[in-house]
Length: 512
Image (tube, rainbow, N blue to C red; front, side, top):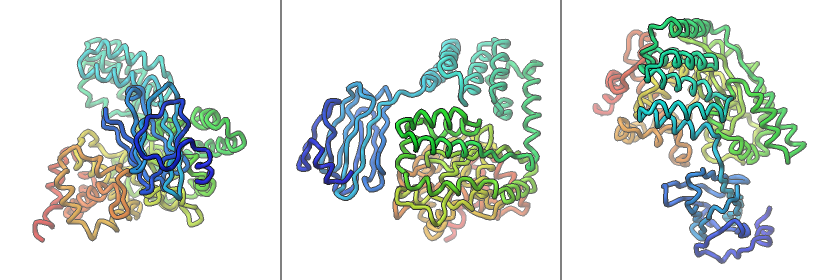
């Protein structure tokens, strides 16, 4: 819709700039944002979102959960402002223009899956040591959502509650259910003090042996399967939905998500979050998706490079394990992650070639759109996440080491640093970045350094925690005489501060 058409259909004149309330009965107003910036916020819970009209796409989606529904949602463009009051509509829609570009701002009052809130409350009760009530809520969660990647962890959490109550048989019963549902984290199970009462029991030891057997099978890199079924299912759903757009959500749920591999099930839980968010991204990129189609289907052509990296890793770290690799199409917020089931690759974010249009991508998306040829190095990066052992420390330093080692060792085994653009920016500014990092590294401040795409600026990229972690790991590796031992030390560090000090990374700045 053009700006002229919007002006003709809008019930508001562009001259209105004082705040006003909008109810569900009001016609959708047109707001002016001549500076291109729009702020959406709620005063009651510190929720705040800022976006640019020029980068919002056709539709900017803001999702509001049940607890926040009573709060007015304020929209401010610097010229116009309004407050939106919930009146039982699932969605409210407004138009925002900067004079050149126009986007539809949609406020969606969503209800999360029942198990999400139940599991959250159950976890709170567990921490309060109210184990019996925690079990009841976890069981309600399973009844409400009996399928999905959350099931195995819910069974596991019930087992922990029962074990802490001294009820061994019930605990073992649910632990068996957890393993049967796909729980595979043997190292966590072994060190989990909640299960201490079970650890000499024959049934428990049998479960350990069962998981150890599965774990041992992951030691051979040549047995890794590259699973591409989800990508093919995506394109089938895409074609069907193009013919019947009114059924788009139904089609994608039936043909893509209901047929999901265990990899896509995990990726949905960790990264996609909801069909609504998934479709919002899809519908904002109508030129982009057809152009990347051929590139998303290239996984079979990458096998040689993927297996080459795996064999190099086995050489460097003989204890390495190699899970299956699942290729999926997500919502462009994660190129990859790892779960107990394997390496999960968001191929849509690594499907670049010179003929793919980028005008529908925002700044962070453009800067993080990588070439299809770099998928093997991306898989190498995610492999390190699957292997690394220290995942409990929540400080910025530990988080940066977790990501930085994946970049550093991933480059050792693949020959490519998938975050080269960060290094190109940061190397000339290393001391400046180090000073900023040093001030926060022992705090829980990862949000300013890792997965902070909302802070991406033309003059300062997001995700510089990856860079700092890389440089610290690089310093440790370069200092070591035994390189294989250095790789082992990096992967298995338990104390982030001690590892950092052993690296000597800060020394080069104190000497300058």
